[in-house]
Length: 239
Image (cartoon, rainbow, N blue to C red; front, top):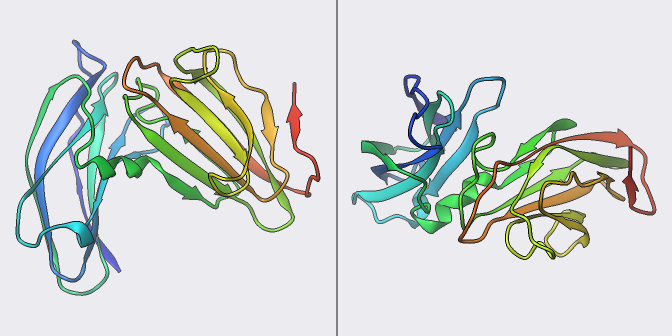
């Protein structure tokens, strides 16, 4: 296993918009190439977040492919381009980067899966795409948190601003009690009111964020940690 990494210089914040569209071309050639991922890193203690990814297995060999992704420009930022290899021969090429105004839909469409992650650490943060900037339209992101056996997961929102709707039919955060999309639903949340603190009844929790084709907000930041004990009933803990 190996990787090739390029880190950009520090770009300044935009004075005329909260987001831009990054456009580029790329190719991945050879049996050893696995994937290409772009990360955005912002200051103020935020971890770098994956914003675009593609896998070599679905590409036509030796041909250039065109990609694009939104980036948040509410503050200075860096981009990291990471190519993953499995040890066999292979190479990647990326070029013709330029930025246009406003957010854009990811290309290829499957590149949005960059925001979905499986999390196995005992604690950590989950943030909506481009947080603390505005999330983009037409996104679906899934985080599955898994703790060790005989542990439960406590999940608490620290920032929350999602497009409002009486039934959360537009943009929303959905939390499920288990490790899949079919696990029992705990709650579906939107608007500006903080959801209650959530504790799982097992060692897995699934969080889904979805946005439709109109209107955006700053999204959410949440903290989770695992703790010993197995609940038989889900508890919504109100502080």
